[in-house]
Structure formats: C-alpha cells, structure tokens
Length: 118
Length: 206
Image (cartoon, rainbow over all chains, first blue to last red):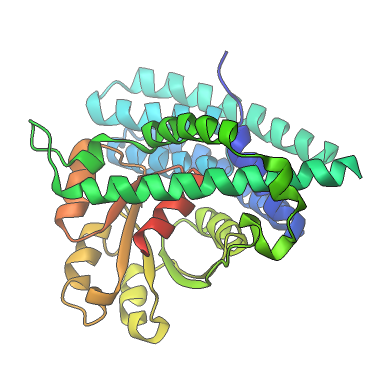
C-alpha cells in the first residue's frame, strides 16, 4: 500500500506548529492554493501539448507536496516529471495527471483530518 | 511523575543518537577525497541512510554499556541534553515559497537564524549585507539556476568563508557530482528530510 503522508516529516511540522501556532495551517493553505493551480495548469499543458511546461509544473508540484509531507502526490509528480522527460506520450501523461488529481484530494483530506484530531 | 522521567530519558537517548549521527556525518565528509573504482567520491556513495544504519548499530552497543538512569539523575545543565546550540546565520535561496516557509520555522526551531530569499539575483546582491555562515541553495530557479549562482559565488569575496549546501529534487548522480564540482560543499535531495538536513548543515560548520 502506498504511503499517503510522510509521517516522520509531518510530525516535525506538527512539533514546529506547537512553537509557531498557525504555521501548519498556513503551510496547508499555501499547498491547497498552489497545488490546485498547478494541477489546473498541468491539464492545460496536456491540452496544448506543451511538454516542457508539463515537466516544469510536475517538478514544482513535487516540491510543494514534498514540503508538506504529502508523499503520495509528491511521488506521483516525480514519476510524471521523469515520464515527461523520457517519452512524449500525452495519453500516459494525462493518465498520471488524473492520478495526481485524486492523490491531491486524498493527501489534503489526510492532512486536514490530522490537524482536526491534534 | 513517571511520564516526566520517561520524557527525560527519551531526551537523553535522542541527544546521544543525534551526537553519534553528527560524528558519523563528519566522518563521511572526511571521505570526500577518497574515490571508488568508478571515480565517484565515497561521500557521494555513502548515503545518509547507510550512515543512520551504522549509527543505530553503534547506538545499540552504547546503550548496553551506559546506565541511562544515572544520567537521568544528574542536574539538567550537566546532561548531554544541554549542549549549547549555536545560532548560525543561514541563508536559504529557493524560489518555492512553501518550501521556504517550512524551512524557516523548522530550522529556526533547530537553532539556526534563518533568512530566506526567493530571488537568486537579489540574494547574490544582498550576500555581503546578510553575511551568512551557510547557504542552502536550490538548483531549478527562474532568472538564475543554482549552477549559475555557484559560478558567481566563486568570484565573491565571501565565498571562502561560506559553506554551501545544494538542495534539489534533481537527485541524479550527474547533478550531485556537478554541484560539488561547481564549488558547493554538499548536496541534499528534495523533498528534505529535516533531520538529515539539520545534520548536514551542522556537519558543514565544523
């Protein structure tokens, strides 16, 4: 089973949040806003068949999801980045994009659930 | 009461483990001059995962020899938990705002004075004013890549006094070697493992 969150990393963020209240909420807000926008732009780049932009956006998505410990999304974005560099198969890129879309929802739910329970 | 005692013992154990990891990292760093049969520096070959595995096995041996109850009874200021944490000025150059925010607070909690800059060109201009001891640099940035930044940095008067750790999601052997060749002192893969990052930053300062 694939890991949704990198718990070791997320616990560090939770620990930091105890000293800096609002830190985790602000990080989650940023993730929500930026990941949504990146996923939207990724769809656009597939539609326009802009491979270079797709690689750049997947790289960005990998970074922002990794910063919050959203490993399910980060790992998929990494796969998408590599795939976009190695082959020009937009069908595959679109398929993995759908997976990233679902992974984003799953990760965000898991993050919010953890915050609610803490 | 029991909880407080348990927490104290856990803190002592953690500090011991951290110290061992720092020492191992330092040993690994000293291997940088050695290369394997493919010409790859040993410090690149030996990953932090391997060093952690080593640290764990050494820690288990140590645990058997040390009586943690005795350590727990010593006054707080004499225990290993009270090792001074120097405030080191760290400059982060990364165009990813979320990543910066995450690093700003997590590294501040680990004893660093953190200053961050999203724009590499501005960071280079402000370097003298900031005067950091250590720099955490991203590679893929708009306007100037980490490689270009390093090339400029090598001509900067502060370069000799500065330690540079390059962090990137481009975790390919070629990139890891290139950043070292361009004058960086270390490489760490993104997404960051905060414990590994802290150890690497601290080991560069010795």
